[in-house]
Image 1 (spheres, helix red, strand yellow):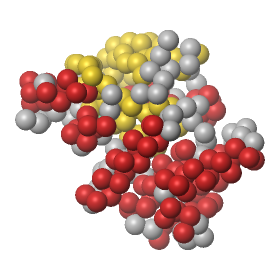
Image 2 (cartoon, rainbow, N blue to C red):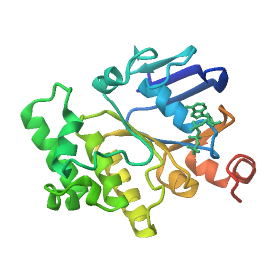
Image 3 (cartoon, rainbow, N blue to C red):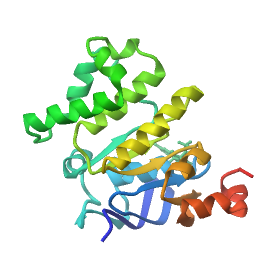
Image 4 (cartoon, protein in one colour):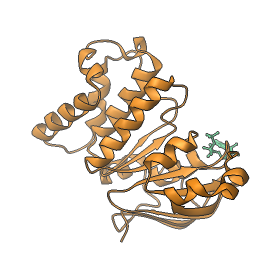
Length: 238
Ligand SMILES: Nc1ncnc2c1ncn2[C@@H]1O[C@H](COP(=O)(O)OP(=O)(O)OP(=O)(O)O)[C@@H](O)[C@H]1O
């Protein structure tokens, strides 16, 4: 059994049929990527898994439990955390306050919260230095780090990350790439959506290619990287 099993989901916005019989699986411990052009349906896939959109048909199972009709907070309590696009942090709150929101509503023991906090400060030392600062005063890159850190404080087993490198300068992209790998090596399963296809395929074990709401290919990332036809047809690369 895979940690996440998405089986033939169909998701609509009103009359618009966006995801067509979409299936994918993510095994525990893996870093899996979902890549595809703008508007291909990547965000909609993550939102369907999390419960922000409810598929009209099909099934989503997390750790063997049907979560297809879960509300987002229920999916979150089950162990999934979504880091949305555009780093949504609360600008008026401090870094520390933003982080504390990460474990609110989750039944996590105080010792575990301390452990998680230490761990995220290990990944992102800058956040510890800026604990008292308002999030809105930080750079875009730091806000992205904060959004990921906050997501980790809910103690997830599966992290869904939507376009984390968007708009970051190259040195930060490099840092973020290392941190995502480290988070995964520390035992958290990751499903990563990325426009930066080269980066996504470099750090992932397995890749899914989506186009017009359908999975067009899936294979180990090392094989996708060599597949010039898929890259030029669906990813505008090569
Ligand atoms: N709230 C919405 N209402 C109607 N259509 C939407 C809505 N959100 C997205 N869409 C449409 O659904 C399709 C898939 O969008 P989605 O955001 O999932 O794609 P994406 O692959 O994540 O693209 P991007 O990289 O641009 O975010 C697009 O055609 C988009 O226009």
